Amino acid sequence: MAELITVARPYAEAVFRLGKESGKLDQWSEVLAKLGLIADDATARQVASNPRYSAAQVQQLLVELLGAGVTDEVKNFVALILENDRFTALPVIRDLYESYKAAEAGEVEAQIESAFPLDAAQVDALKTSLAQHFNRKVAATTSTNADLIGGVKVTVGDVVIDASIAGKLSELATSLKS
Image 1: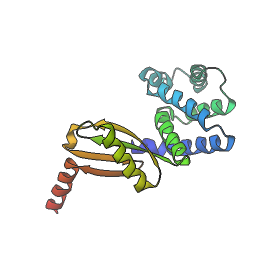
Image 2: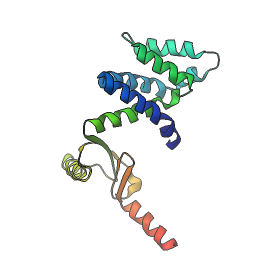
Image 3: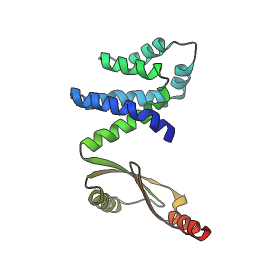
Image 4: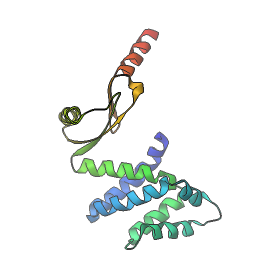
């Protein structure tokens, strides 16, 4: 995953700059969301990587799947992605683009993992605390992970706050080994 992020980052940054300069951030969000969904599909990945199909044929297929009103900028982006063999990076490009867009709006996305389901009040309390910590509005997605044993693990961009029992046990084991 780290390698895909490294590959995807320049594309996401370029599209974000283009969308910002042209005032089309939302339109690019829609395009990248569709392309990301297409790239997540196993059949689409097989077609894109099949040497029997030229990049131009795959580009035409993707443009058709995007629907009417595809701009020349989008066509050029799709061509560039295929030319540089970055089709599988599209979901990561989409995610990075959305994080840049949220940061521009003064928001951060937090992934909150907990050992047990959190109720709305607990999520709101975490969001409030994270908003104070990052000085930004926080949008949160929650998931459960029984491996945490207890507590929560919060990921915001590259920052991980591990307040889980499993994390504390891991820290303890590491300190005992040294």
